[in-house]
Length: 344
Image (cartoon, rainbow, N blue to C red; front, side, top):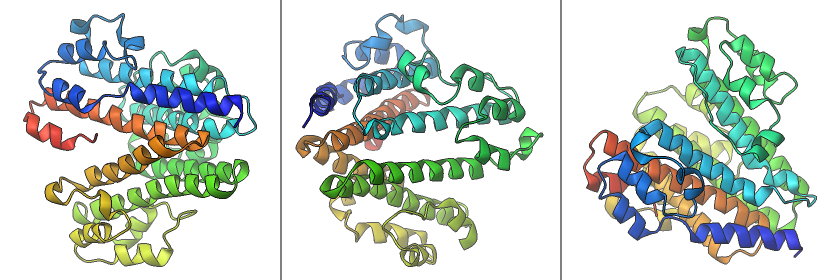
């Protein structure tokens, strides 16, 4: 393994060692204000880089969430910034995902008429390597402005297809789906291009598992909460470059009772990760599966690309945990119910 590979593994595992532990979550669950959470997170090496200079009593929920995201960007940039190997493009996949989030956030602002700066103070590394001018995108007031800011990027043709002058006519859900399908396609192509053998198979397994679980969630939710017709469910799924066949997906979609979709998950290869005694909701179970698979690879893998990939997944789950605690405090949710939403 080359120096860069060792550096990726060392950096990722070192930062993972500073993750929030069970005892940290127990402490966070005792708090009743945003200020208390900020004061506690300031002590953690992963978050003090963005929280150390702020005064906790001046922050509201949205500002804290922005700073947590900023910490995430800095941590990823620490790993990616020094990579000069041939497979560098693979390590930039997360930046593409963040670009999509910025575009979608800007689009939501245009639709709502509430134009705000979507992502504040991103690391200079991200701004430098982004495929578009982030400031220009986040300041877009209209769909036309957004298209202009994204000309000559991979996102332009997708958005152009859905262009509407009237914001209320914009098909946001369709755009979001096509963006994520595009991202999945890029992931698969880059894994194919830069890796072979066991590493390629394992990376495919990690990414395809994530997409397949997300498909199951969509099928369940669309059937249970929206009673969506089959053709609408199909349109919401990513069906290319996954292991599940169209026939397997069709069998799930045709199930009359949405709860039977959950039973299929319980009887799948993911059954070891299902919390049968405390079956909270399907999103929890899905994230629990991803968490345990990622954690297993983090501990036992010595392949830089795999360690980096699961580091990203584990960070996303930790970020979601913090946001759930913040939301719980905001809406005065019982602490026991908040805890049941956390994955660690």
